[in-house]
Image (cartoon, rainbow, N blue to C red; front, side):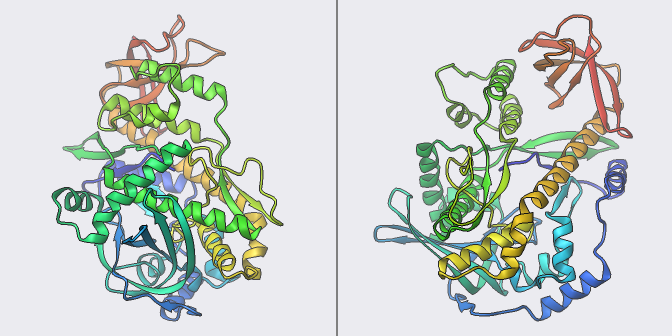
Length: 480
């Protein structure tokens, strides 16, 4: 599910980078790995635990990631079959490198997931693994958890197989390059099929009532000592690629269900109050949402390249609050079992280099596919995983929120007292003089307070910037 992505370009010695470094210290984000963890990772990189890995190096896999990425979790190879399609999806076999109960394992449980800052990331695993021996880098033979999912001509799943294998990626591609190759007809057969399969899976998503949010990435641009924000709207290729990951997560959840033991990514249906709030935001941003039209249909109609639509897509992520991880055993599924946005059983299993739970989900699926009991180390850790992942998610959300606040404060710090055009997108029930506004230019969302009259929900409002302090990471407006 999407998060608010912020990416920074420009020199390494800007004041904003210094503020982001201070923020990491303030939040207690680990900077380096302990020496024992680094030593264990280096040893594992030299001698991974290879057991029963079939040779699948004949399949010409490729990876699709942002241009600078080196922690490559997934590689794919797509085929057309007589009655449909076959998806080969290789996931980095992190369990081949992490010894249960060792220093590396303990550190991964402490970190839980990779944390993303605008100027870099704080990884889950040391670089010798995440960007080296475990990463599905081109030209390198790597251990992987290899999914083989057959689809019919309409994109529906027919069969699933998963096993350990050795794979070799032939190419590292980025989204823009993939889109360009597919659009101009130069993509080789496997890559060209990404559009066909991705489009079919998007149609299947619509049929089952699911929804994917194409939330734009915001790029922080530094020019002559000042900052700006620019949106990068996701390309169709981003969505097609995401559909392959979603397909695998649903296949994994079904395997777990059949075996009776697993861990699901769940999300309850959004309460009426959250949907009503989102309708108010739609009105404020002039998004057409007739009362008889479902939320998912509205989202599919949006163009993330338009600023107001991009802002609304960001507001839509509030309906994803409440997502969590739920363990089940003895065949008794939790309530709710379904992820409301996916509209199906679903689990996280495709990003083990960046997310702790995926290593365990992969292991449970391998056991289920082989009709054997999962390893004891996986079963022992299972009950504690939901709480660990919840804490890791909370920390990631804090990082995201503080980074957004800091960037916006840096962007506006020299404009205190200036007046801006805005929309009132939310008003506090307890205090109608306090709420949230969406600023047209720059495209930010911030708190407004200090007026004497109730804020006009869903209406335009001129607001004056009263505070923009990168030191406190806070931006505040008042009615002008």
